[in-house]
Length: 327
Ligand SMILES: Cc1cc2nc3c(=O)[nH]c(=O)nc-3n(C[C@H](O)[C@H](O)[C@H](O)COP(=O)(O)OP(=O)(O)OC[C@H]3O[C@@H](n4cnc5c(N)ncnc54)[C@H](O)[C@@H]3O)c2cc1C
Image 1 (cartoon, rainbow, N blue to C red):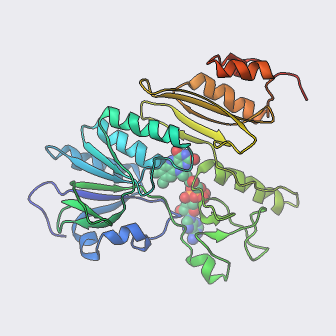
Image 2: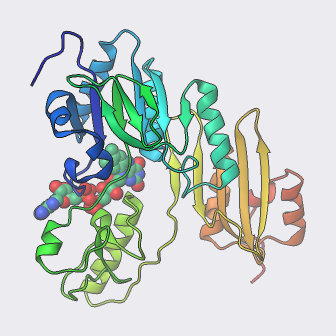
Image 3: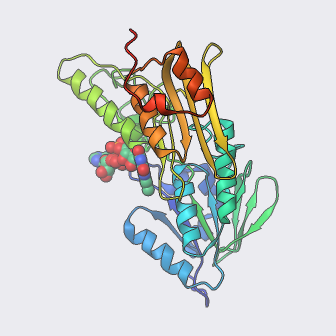
């Protein structure tokens, strides 16, 4: 490995054991084989990797990091780097942050919050290449722009490692394709968690993995259970703003969405009602209402018209009250 006279800047890649080998990932193709060998590129698998990243950054005088990926991990990592005094830019490929979990307004407010604390957010930016030979000097985007930085942290999701399933002749998509009982294309083989693809989704979330494992265990034991695919509860932690979404976050044509927002304080609360029942919510701040709304979703609680009207006047106490006894 070539050594730089300065602290070597780094490229870090979020990765877990079910993920593909680093070089398989399209966004990691941004890093050439030569760079992969020569820059301090590594996958963030263990606490020691995070400690190494911090040490690298603390060795720089004015560290600048680019975080590729505006999902949960990218945002949490960006905020943690910012707290270390790093000048951070988030580069998100889609048009907005947490695009699967938040509606557009909440997403925009989240971006506004990150910018208000001093983290720069760039949407619709895709990495094409990492610049630098023995150290990172920046990234080049697909659009041809160069963004200077000395650390790149990629938090752009995971891809299932598929070799074993391919060798077994199983149907493969992004992951190992399963049915609602977690059976692969071979009925004697089950797959759950990050490696499994159901209805075109590999969510990469612990809650989903646990639920899928429950379904598979029940079915293998001779029982009947089915996995229902829905956008999982999403919680953003450790960023100074409590963000949570669950259930249906987008109102369908006959639904009622009640929204209350305060841009100056970055506080947002929204519930979606379907035939009077609470079916989903999005909350930035408003921790107590979020807990109450989540419980209402779990209970499929129905609100009476008076209570719905009160929510519309920013009085959210009906959500916290006991369920209304209407069947
Ligand atoms: C940095 C990071 C932070 C995360 N934070 C959150 C979070 O806040 N909330 C959340 O819901 N999710 C989070 N996740 C995602 C969550 O960890 C995963 O969705 C969950 O662990 C998936 O469980 P799993 O059993 O499918 O895979 P894993 O937990 O990765 O377990 C797979 C196991 O299989 C083993 N294995 C792999 N190949 C083989 C083989 N061929 N033979 C035998 N064993 C093998 C591996 O060694 C590993 O022990 C995070 C992930 C990462 C990487």
